[in-house]
Image (cartoon, rainbow, N blue to C red; front, side, top):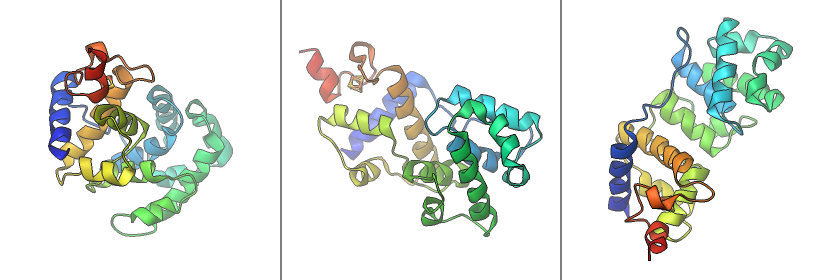
Length: 209
Ligand code: SF4
């Protein structure tokens, strides 16, 4: 199955091209902090809304976690409005400041998970894209693709093993590419006819029979 994952990666890379995540919005500012803020803001909403919220922050001169931490909550609620669930996200970001700036080096996964509002997906996004830690990011798109592609539901631990590689380019791209697949083809109602994985996908191939 692992070699199949590499084949899928190559097919998606050929079709979509490199996604080059994490997408930076701020022209000036702390890129690592921008990834962390974006990873929290994107929970439960689409990236367009996150971009609007990030631009609002930049416009207010808030381009790192320290400045965000020092900004009154009411002001942040207004600036982050496009990103929804704002109160909870502001709390999460302020708590994250303590974890990220309260230590030297890379925060541990358990430390990130101990922050209110940080689940496994967000913790792993932060580790991979902000700190270059080689971890596999699993989200709903990944689970849906795997279940349809292999014709059986896989546990997250199996998915992690399947998609793991020490290479950061691969890890960053495979997550981004599977998300792109989920948005363009492997949607709730899959568009298998035009999907680049159709010939090797359990679900896609069975549709052509
Ligand atoms: S062929 Fe269909 S089910 Fe398989 S990955 Fe593509 S869209 Fe999803």
